[in-house]
Length: 509
Image (cartoon, rainbow, N blue to C red; front, side):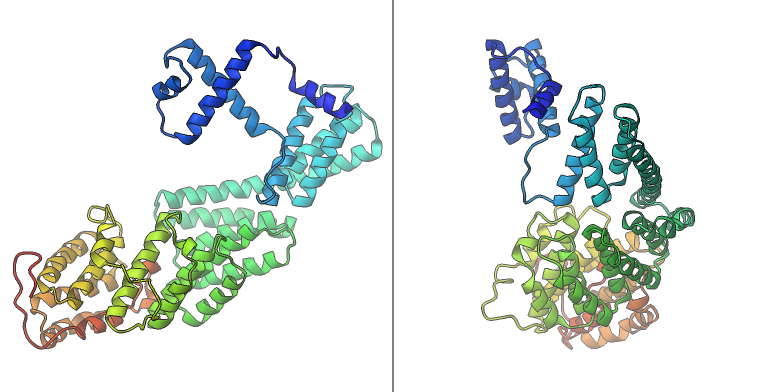
C-alpha cells in the first residue's frame, strides 16, 4: 500500500465531493459521450446538450475540463485489451514508466523510482526500444551516482547509456533520410531528384549495417537503397535488394513482421512489373502461406497473383483466385487504391466470362448482379480526373458495348478515348497504351468490318511488338490483360459486314 500511496500523492489531491465538481463531472461525461457519437457536431449543438450557451464562459471552462479529462484518459496507466499488439502495449508501458520516473526523481524519499526505471530499462532493452533504453539508462546512471551510490551499477548504466545513445542517434538519422525520400516521392519530384537523394543517403548510412548490425536500423538502410532502384525503374535490382534484405532480417530475432512486409510488398510490385509469372507465383504462394486475411500483405498477395494470371492468359485461374479472396477483405474498409483495383479486375473477369474465356462455378454468385453500367457510374469522379484509371474504364465500356452489339455507343466511347489519349498519354513511356487506343479507334472508322479493321491496325500491332510488356516502364496496373490478347478477343466479336452507326448516342443496331 505504501507504493500505491506514493503514486496517489504523485497524482495530486484537491477538493472532492463538492456539488459543483459533481455537476461538472456529469457535464464532462455527457459532452464526451455526445462527441463520441457525433463527430461533426457544432459548438452550438454540443452546448445545447449540456444546457449551456456556446458563447458562455461556463461552456469554455467545460471544454477545458473535457480536454484535461481526455488527456488524463490517454496518458493513464491502466489495463489494456489483451488482443491489441503486444509490442505496442510494451512500448506504451515503458514510456509511461519513464514519464512517472521523471516526475518522481525530485522526491528524495521515493521507493518507487528505481524499481520503475529498472523495469523500464529491462523491457526497453529486451524489446529493442533504443531511445527508451537510452532515456532509462541515463536516468539510472544519475540515480546510482547521486541518490544511491553504487559504483558497479553506475558504471554499467553509464556504458549502456553511451551504447544506446549511438543506436538512438543512428536510428533517428536513417529515419530522417527516409522521410526526406518519401517526401520527394509524395511531392511527385522528378525521379532523378529522388534517385540522387536516395543515393546520397545510402552512401552516408550503409556502414551502419555492419557497425551496429541491428534489424531496426539495417532494414531502413536497405529500404533507402531500394528507393534508388525504384526511382530508376530497375526492378531486377529491386528484386535483388529486397531478397537480400529479407535474408538479413530472417537471421535477426528482433526483426518485426512490418519490416518483412515492406520488402515483400515491393517484391510483389517488381514481379508484376517484370511480368515474371513463375517466380512471382512461387513467391506469392510462400507469402500467402504465412499471411492471414487481416494481415497487411493479404490483399497485396492476391493482387500479385491476379495480375500475373491475367497477364499470362490464365483467365480461369484468375477467376478461381478472385473467388478465393476472403469476402471481408474486399469490403469498403480497404484503402481506395486496392478497393478500386479489385473492382476493375472484377469487371475484366466479368467481360472474360461473357467472352467465354472463363467457366463460372454453378453455385457462384460473383457476377449475378454485376452490371457494367452500374460499375462505371460508381466511379464518381472518373469523368474529370486525370489519373490513368480512366483508361481501364473506357476500355471496359468499349468491350462491353462490342459484346452487346451496341455499336453506336462504341463509336461515342472511341471518340472519348481519342481525346483522352491526345491530352494525357503523349509523354514517353505510354507507347503501348497509346498504340492500343489508336487501334481501337479504327473500329468505328472501319465500321466494325473485321477484315478492314485488321488491315488498318496491322501497323499498330507491329509497334506494340517493339515495346514488349515485360519492358514497359509504366505502373503494372495500367495493363492488366496484355493489349495484344485483348485485341484478339475484340476481333473475334466482329463480323465481315460493315455496321451502320447512328450519330446519336444510345441507338442500338
